[in-house]
Image (tube, rainbow, N blue to C red):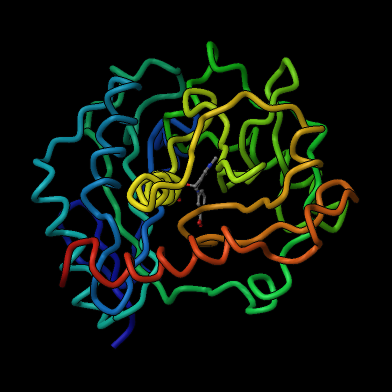
Length: 290
Ligand code: PXG
């Protein structure tokens, strides 16, 4: 039996699931999404992802016509159906089909909700053992007064342009700066540094509020590590003792070189390794079972 996807309340063969070419999610990026992960039949921080999805939808005045608990059940049911113990989950809500104008009121048939579950593509072990070399992108991040970075929308072109820049420089990730040259985040990961024993991440109103980032901040608080949100220039990243990225796919991945500058000792640092170990413990207990 092939894998099924959830599409507006039905389970459909993944190769047969279709949406309209008039869908405003496709025509305009008018929609929101979440990338979620399950560990051993536990959907990690599913409630937090669902909360963020509804907040993103609210911010674009898109009403999800379903209670949160029903959507949580849909995620669990999709995973159960596909017999996936460790999965990557993509939850997407689009404005639905409309006409060729921008007006969301013309999307009369209503929102499209789909859930794709798949095997998780793990990052290579060497990323964690040796650490990543990354670069900063030339492309600046959308100004937060134009597109609020807290909205996880289907409009990812800004990040894709930065990703292309990173790929050209043979880098797995790329740091995006704000229009006024402060470090914000990477194309699909948040960034942290450790300096003088303090854990630092950029102010969370200039980035996506990452679920993994939030988990790291909570661990830091519980373990009494000093933590601060701080506006930083690239030069502060270059001079950090440690640097790492956080994201659903990446978990916590050490960074040992930024734009050719060696970070700290050039090896994954002790705070990064401690946080990764604590994070792995959390993935065994913090979420929704199926
Ligand atoms: N910043 C941005 C811009 C992101 O898109 C993160 C940070 C990390 O957030 P979480 O909540 O995952 O800790 C993201 C993550 C994927 C994928 O396949 C992830 C994202 C976007 C597209 C794909 O992991 N967003």
